[in-house]
Image 1 (cartoon, rainbow, N blue to C red):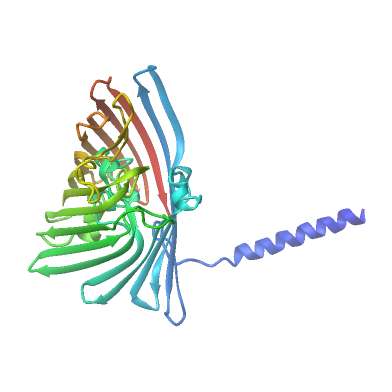
Image 2 (cartoon, rainbow, N blue to C red; image 1 turned 180 degrees about the vertical axis):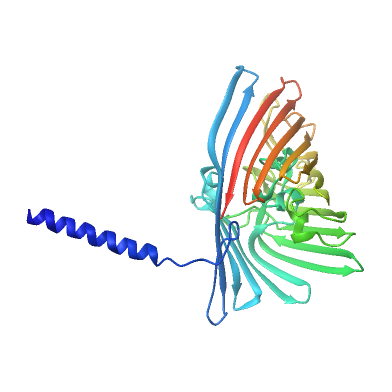
Length: 404
């Protein structure tokens, strides 16, 4: 009996302590989608923490088996930290990816057998008026769709063009400049990076990667940096347009796509050109992109090491090759006042003829409901998948985004 009474008293004390702790919880002065922010008493640093995840259902018709192949997964799960250190002119950003689809990769030998968790780890210094120096690992100034966060997309995921040609993230330095002439805003970005993608721990296997991007906004800036999130959620009251071009040169690239894909047994110089545009006006939005990637002759052996193909088998089938060719992505949508949006997209991929892959086209119709902007939304889309000498296939996706 004594032990029962003693146990009951212990449980009661624990409940009282828990209730006292719950009643003393602090009220955070923030709101949904804005994270939790703290700042030092002496204002020497600040930090904002936020997290988000996407739950995805995806099903595809299989032309070979006539079966419906589907799965339900956590597409992305991210932890994000940003703020300033010592001075508001010196800011940082850290982003970690924890879902299996984010972590999994085929470069363990080049990544010290470690999980590929770190997406961004970059410091940004505003060292002069309108000049910003970025140092660390982050997205390169490539095609617009890739630079737009996966949280802020108009469809469930990015396009076929982006999947084949984007230059993703890399480690190095970037210099950003912005200025204005009348109402016209001009932005220039230059980057020198390692050229082999994120979280590589081995010695640089090739040369460096050089990226340059220029953006022109002829009608002034978008509301809330709206040229770098999809859909006209802020309903621009005057037409807003941004046009841009990027050139990327990866000297002696080691991977299929430069910063992405398998490491190959030989190296090539890769040249990539992107041209893109974003337009928004009163709920209507349009984004277009064109990409072209070429494999150039290697400086070490210009006669025998030209073109994208690295290795073939005895029958002439391609075993190793760089991803080259061109692609186009066009998408547009209209956001109703009820925050429902209807959008359409056409995207294609035209590989270099000597490669094994066939040309592909994708036609997508999407419907989205924005509950709290891009921080809480439900999106679905249906895509017609076409590939040369193969039967058409259909893909259906539905996804919920929650960002705290």
